[in-house]
Image 1 (cartoon, one colour):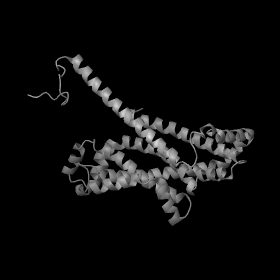
Image 2: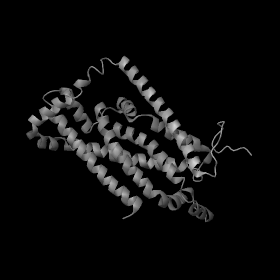
Image 3: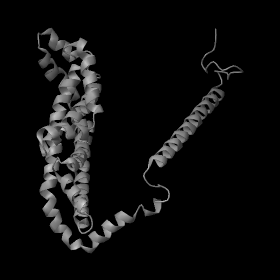
Image 4: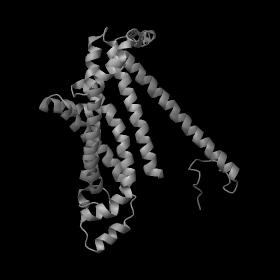
Length: 292
């Protein structure tokens, strides 16, 4: 009988009965493969940097010492006008609330659509099993298109404002959460579903009563995590005219010197909001998963 436990390499193999020799052999193989992957990674990084350097309008290395000039200018001007920061916080607070509203509505819409796609694309739960590949590829397409691309198309159709941002983020969120929800639903116990089927329950009743109680904690955890991501996304979309605090940040940076105290105020306001929601959602996620 051929020994294939340690691969097809010729030569003397370690005795499987000697655990120490077998362990050393596997360790050497892992180190060899790790070294090869490290060399390949460094080679790809070096080639990518060289290509970027050749295509860059300037010289990255010669301009590296100027990397901190712009941040230093912004911070020094904001420090000189630090007395204006409390008033600027109040000025931009409505824009921050608009950004949070965009993230909340888009997360809710994306979670609802993603939940439907997840149930329709999960083996053993799907309403139409033959259409599972169609629903899965649809979620792939939703995740593949960046929010900013969708937002630019919708702004061209609907005009500027928060509506294109909500639709763009919800579209991407549907694909992302649909994938995560589907992976959770695949691990659900099918016995409650089978019991409901035996008494004549409809597909919707089986999902509502047999599946959702099992997957709800993990689904809510993923939705809260996505809400944090969508706050950042909604702020970024403000740069393309989708409203919110990102639009105010774009205007402040376009004016350049003299408006840098506004830039710092917006950054601080956005940073504090993201940290607060990150801590809050992390707390609730832990309670949902681990219990009180």
